[in-house]
Image (cartoon, rainbow, N blue to C red; front, side, top):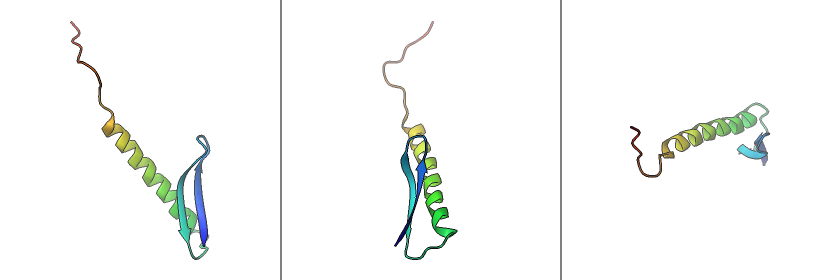
Amino acid sequence: MYAAFVTDVFSRKFVGWALSDLMRTKALPLQALNQAVVFSVLWNIMCFVMIKPVGPKQDNF
């Protein structure tokens, strides 16, 4: 079993990973990178959709 991990250097967190029975030098790291990119895009969309103003509406005259 082989594993490939993509790490965010700034936050020092794993942002993508992939597992495979075969060590394919091109495919395995690209699968991990693809997962990291897809997760990043989905995370940004979720954060944008979930941000809503909180509190009473203030009228500026």
